[in-house]
Image: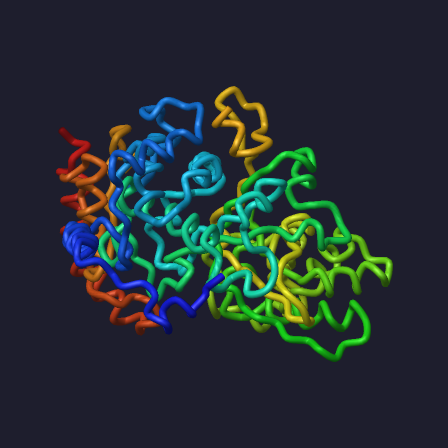
Length: 371
Length: 73
């Protein structure tokens, strides 16, 4: 975290020779190779230092990034990671994230070009989250942690420089959201009373993994007073079933919506005997709106609704996802009883992928590459 | 674009504010000559009579796209 003492006491003066860094940024900005913020020079030494943290060849193609269909090689990911300010040992996380983003169910082409304000939220699970100091607690969506700030940013730069993502030209987001600069968090597994997210998806607890989900900006849910999990989660359900969200109008398609709750809240809910599945079931049943409120509004009529919804019945209740397991529940955040809904467009599903060596063996520590 | 590549005649409707976007995507995908029919923006929540008039005006372009477009080559 920051220490302003050095600045206040002027213990360090900035060398004139570092002016080159500003000139470098101007050059890259003019070329359209940045997100608008200053980037670091991807010198050969810096890129080589990053490439030490992979056993893959620099020219190995990790994924093809639409809409330009550029080849995201290991080296290009490393270059963008250096530019974003990443530490070299973040590279294996970024490679896994790019692999995840190019899976068909993620629908990267649509996510790169849509008018919807989706940003690629990178969630880090397992021991590497701790090793790389990915924040999963206070201010988890906020500033202050290098891993969160730069890994999400590196993915955005890959989208720009490899995939041809250009606001107003190929990226037609009507408003976008600040997470398009960086959107990265850890899962607070140690603080969760339930199984970790990546374990639910079939990975071993000691395996590190990433999940990518294309999400809107997190929407806070503040409930300090409810005395039962039902009342508390009704507050979440109300926010998740907002009339302006995509979920209610797209729930006949494969889709997901996510709720992030703190360790404190999760433990309190668990003390009432609720499993994670109970939370998912409750939100699936409760985050709904009646047909009468949805008809001829929002995205009505553009996508199918679930078969079990009788659209001729004004009182039929419409869910935000097709199945209860499509409500994703993640434990993260600091103290107090805030929650956050991360809503999606509904045309994309999250992907979880292990962080591995080239042969598929789960990576235990980034330091293994240096042995 | 996928249908055009398979030889199926298509006409892609866009509103004018998406002109640069559509042509940029076509260039990136190597389909510069994809038949695109441009209509005025916006479309959402406009009166039906106005929309009918726009469709009538776009009809000739639509026919040209489907009969003289890239996939006819």
